[in-house]
Length: 217
Image 1 (cartoon, rainbow, N blue to C red):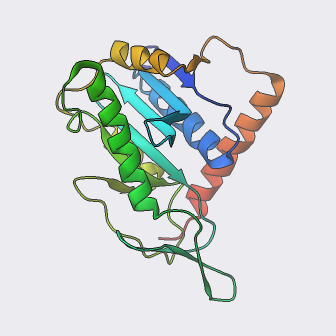
Image 2 (cartoon, rainbow, N blue to C red; image 1 turned 180 degrees about the vertical axis):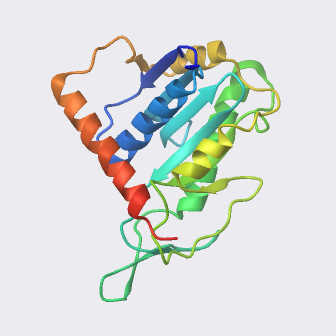
């Protein structure tokens, strides 16, 4: 028996140009729709007094996850504290620019929960999870911290698994719609994809599928 048709909305702050973010969002939509799960995506927007850049929020009736998306070709190394580095072809390590990805993802999660709390005064930390997603997965040879109760860390498969875990005091989809509109995000769901969008979607999906199939243990 095929799953029931799912309701799906995408709210966008600014046009997404990062290939990994596009591929991750499209894969999430494809997988949730295949299971008949109603969902809302909030993508690529700025939030909070410190103007944090939020890559993606995936919200269903049972849970929500604030996702920071990173895509690395070479092995990546890092800890909860301190700088992260990527392994180069010659074996040397190059320190990554910007903040520690773990801290970046955690701060993004708390920025979202603080903004939600400002709407009705409830503590939203139990309602919204956070994840550092190395899409489609961490390259073989990577050495990164395991997830903890504050933040999940893993690849796309771990993100899908996290979305199947109900959260206490889950935020309703109507609340997420109101939140998106309060931030000035634009509902992209009614816009039909262009021919170029369809070609890019097919390419990115094929690329993600190939990457998962060839990724080392």
